[in-house]
Image (tube, rainbow, N blue to C red; front, side, top):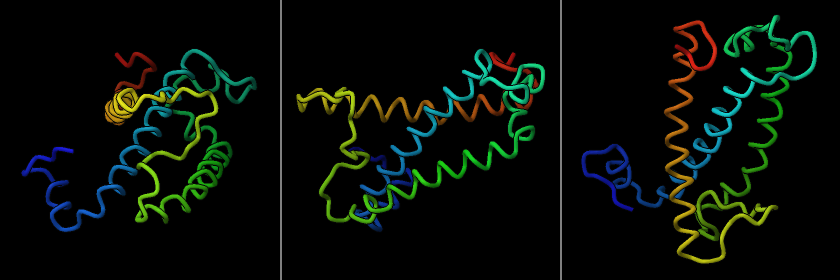
Length: 154
């Protein structure tokens, strides 16, 4: 991995290079969450869960759902916390390097390629898409909050 000398990551790796897998794990986890968040921010503009409290009339903009449905937000945060707690064992074992960062050996659909060259390409694509999604969800939330309108936020 190439790290530019002027970056914060370069400074951190000079101090503790053994933390690189942890940084990559965190980047992948945040990227995956951002990809789901991006989809979850756009999809409710077109499709809603059945129920009067979730209707387009009750919540015209997705950004308003946070304040309009506090009970549902508590439930969502609870499920996210349980899923996060399931990864503690894998993170605790990160220093033994028995797996690649972000690899939980969970591929029920068999989408991960067998060829090592394709695996490298697949991992790079996931990393880049995750980085893009982190920027995108920040821009989407900001655009929705400033404009007060739903998707496409202009």
